Image (cartoon, rainbow over all chains, first blue to last red; front, side, top):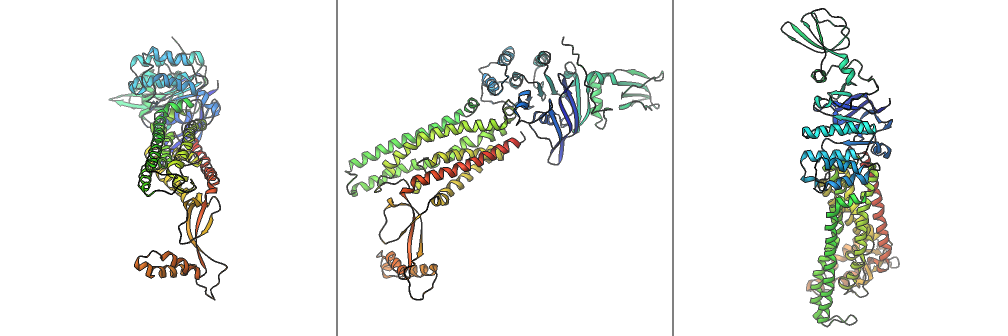
Length: 302
Length: 329
């Protein structure tokens, strides 16, 4: 399977600080990839670079094999981008925002975009400035979705949405992937809302990629080991985190721990545990960060 | 794309249209009032101007000067109200992140937005131009014998050059917005920039766009219909030789000015000091001259000035496109 998005040693510098550095990753075509990381980790920078909004200071970023560049019509036709600030023309009416999308995009799906907002009971004849923050986010999403892109880059799309609206957005993304094969890269601070829909995960920390892998492989390759403190020598695994409480040690490791003594317990961590362990230790790296397995995606759409 | 620009700018475009409409109404009113006042004081266009009419004429011209002021600030308003927000307001509100992520390239987005506003401005200015021409010939220039619109304050608001100047002002504002990215800074830069360029154009560039005519100065006042007095100066008369005198022209001018100032006429308030001055210059082989752009150069200068503006517009547009293409959103 080809990569919808590929970066090689990608970097973006703001004055003397790097917003993103040495970022090498691949987002498989047709996947929903979650992007997590603490504030300032470089999530928005990565999405802006992928959308062609910013230019790289180092390395390269390509979308479906083409350089990410907003001066290329063929690139723009395949990509839609939702900025974290949800920029909209506040003086426009909602229906005018949809007309805006229609006028600027050849593949615009007016019916779906309108229906999406009607279903959410957002009045089409209201000015955008009169809508709530959540409703404005939905309008911005409708403009993004109505473009019928091949790659959707969404910067915290669930932020400011109520739980019901989040479910709606989740379903919309799943439908889009199922019916059109759209690739989605979305950032979030909340791992639990990514887990049900994402099949790949990228963890960014301190402007660098810590992890880039399928969620399935992450869950399969990470283990929680609980055993007596003092016997913690593991050569075959990559220890991500360890903590000692009394005489008991708890480790999160990547890799197969093999056969352990009877005083050791091997447990399966959930995704949030894995993400938090990596975020707590920014120097920790997945064993082979750049080698993301591109595999067939079997998604349960139920 | 044009719909989007119209939708974004419709309030501003309507405001500008109202301003232009108000100017037209004021022009019609002042012309009507002027003609009524002239007929009431017995003015005949072919006859000698009656002294009773001089007050009427000066009063009407004083009111008409507001129209001239209003027309002279029009390029500034176009630059500030339509030009500066074109890119700067998008960058400030971050709506460029929305607009530039749609299916049209940044270059096309800018060119189409700019073109929509340029078309609006050109239509408005083209409608306004013949009305200005009519009004100037009826009111502002009507007391000149052999009326000419080449006088600098009339030249700058009549003909085709103001249309090009308006497009230039729009492009200047847009370019300032692209460079500075903030409306307030762009407004300040546009104000200063337009003041310098428009002022410099009338002060230095336009007068030199066609060969000037040098007219020897005499004590008698020259008619204004001669043209646009660009500058006054002196030149050494090659025919006249005064002995072996080799003083510089500057020294001669200074010498004659001193003589004129100390002449009995000057001290008694007789008013013939300019004749003394001119005679002194003549006796030293120097001639006082006025440099004019004659009335016959009106359209040559208009088209050449418009050409200069259009070259500047092309440069500004190119710079704007370059900045927008490279700019981080």
